[in-house]
Structures are given as C-alpha cells and as structure tokens.
Image (cartoon, rainbow, N blue to C red; front, side):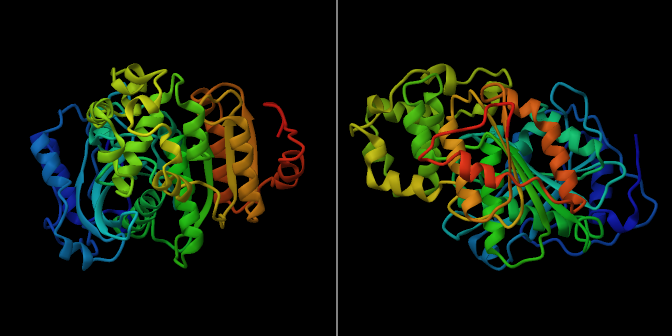
Length: 451
C-alpha cells in the first residue's frame, strides 16, 4: 500500500529518503542534525510514501540516540514546539501487522512542570486521505518506565489503545500521540503533561505544513483514564494561553478527578499499586515530596520495583508488579509516617494537580463508569460541577461497567462528539442538570442510563 499525499502536505523532504533507507535496512534513521531545529520542508512532488509492516525489533542504542536530550543551552534557544529531530517509523498495531497510516516520530522542545525546557517525543499518524483535522490522543500508559511510552509501544505492537486510534484514522483524521509524561516519566504531573501535549501539537503543525497548520485545521483532545487526565490538563492550559491552536473540544473518560480523594479511596484495595505509582510519579516532577525521608526500607524496595513498571503493560498481558505485587497493600506499611496524605508537601502537590480548578475554553464530553473502582461517583460528579461552575459546556454520560469497559463502550460517542465539534456544531450542555441534581447538599444523581 503506497498512498500519496499532496506535495504541500508532506513532511520534511529528508523523511522520504530516510523512509527508503528504513525499508532497505530494516532500522530507524533520523532526520535533521542532532541538536538543530528542523527547517521548513521542501518536497519533490509525486513521491509516494510507503507504509512498512514494521517487524524489526527495537535497537536500544538507536532508541537512546534518538531520544537524547539536547544541551540545556540549545533547548533554551528554541521556542516551545520547535522540532529537534525526526524519523519515519514502521508502526505496529496491537496484535496486528501494521497501521494503515504513514507514521513518523519527532523530538520537540517542551517544558516541564517547573518551566525548565526539555525534549519530548511524539508519534504522528497520517491516514491515506487526511482531513484538515488533528486528534491529539493521550494514551493512558501510566508508566514509570519509558518502555511503555506510546512512542515505544507503537513500535512493539503493544499499544492496546491503538483500537481507538484506528477509529479516528478511519475517519480520515490525523492522530498525534505524545509521550505526555515527559522524559522523566512524571506520571500524573498535570502541568508537565499539558505542556507536552500542546507543544507536541505545535511541533506536528510545523512537521506537516499545509495540512495541520492550515487556518481551518481544528484540533480535538481525547483520552481515557490517565490519558483523560493529560487531555484535560492540556485543555485547561490552552484556555490560559493566547495562541492559534484551534482546539474544538475535549473528550475525556474516567479521569482521576481528585488525586487526594482517589488515593484515600484505593489505599488497601486491589488497585493500591496505582496510588503507590502516583506518589512516585508526582515526586519526579515535584522533589519537595522527599521520598528519601518519607519511605522506609520496604518503601525503598517498592520504589525500585515500581520504577520498572507501568500499568499499560499490565493490561496488555505482560506481568508487571504494579497490580499483581501491591494489591490490597496499605501505604503506611511503606512509609516513615502514619498517613502520607497528611504530609504538607504531598497535600500541596496533589491539590495543585487536581483537575477542574481552571476553566476550559471549549466544550467537554465527560464519560465515567458507574462502578469505577478508581474514581467513585461522588468524585466524578464533583469534577463535572467544578467545570460547569467555571462556565464550561459539559456533556456527561454515565457508562455501565467499572474502569475499563466504558473506554470501549463510549469510544464511538467520543468520536461523534469530536466530529460535531470539528463541524462547529453546538453541544448538548448538561450543566443545568449537573449543577441542580448533583448539588452537594441534595446528593441526588442520574443513573447510568440517564444524563
């Protein structure tokens, strides 16, 4: 299959030559100088872009070189979203031979939670007949180890959320997958994720000029669970910025609505490892959470183990210690304090990363499992109320099931919502009902088959 893109839509010319080398050599090749921003591309018309099946295993040395952080001085000289290096890839779908889309990865300049410039990585998928649309899909890789980053999972064929991505590609929508936890794998660090997503969109627009930087190119944000968390943080950040990103709407399913409340809820449950993982991830972005002091000997062993883990791989069928090793454990058995959630630094960081404290400038489709063990119904209702109180138009759907089933059952509804927003159609704003029926004083609510 060798579909053609119009010349004005193609990526930098070096990509096409690099792709030929990739097919011939079975490896990954890089475009641009290691620490140079990629210039505006010039393309020779009429060249076809092949989509290889991608069965070559990762070469770790090449991966390390591609993802290498430029010098601090070089990063500071680049604007957010500047392209640093790129390569064509042979993308593999989950348990399928290949992805029906042209695929590239690029490294771009972004910013961490504290304003320090960093280099992040993203994957861009372009379907054969692309529309002037872009879906930034945030994968719930929920990782402390880079092997589960979307940019690696799509090379290995282990990204189980490829099913959702394929649905967007089938509509002709290009899809961007950012490694939104950043180079340090700062899981659930909201500001860090927001910068990674928004700067990744800027880099994609530069990389695919004419298609993604057109004046009518509209952008949708979508994600589930940890991916919904990143999507919502990106939407919150975008609302505070005055830029030309035409974000049309955000679809978010099953986000961790309140980190402190969720941690309290799942401590000692079958999902306790997610709480442990979140503490480790937040500490990477916020060193004021002094784990060297807060963790006892068992806690330090736990940190070493979970630093090699990721929830995405556990769900993909690769045994991981995150769920299997720490189910029904209690955090106080791993810390030097009786209650980690009462430590001032922990409370400040968790509160600073709570969703819904800022408005969205675009409509939100929010869907949530009725029996979700990670985010109880009262937390989901409270998050919807917070967004409504800020003036955000919110469409809310309860879904039958726990934490995983709603991702599947409501994917088509999320896509339909984005399609409506791409067409600039208004949303069915449910905030009047949310603010009245879900009042904290009344405690009333709609069931899973009612909005």
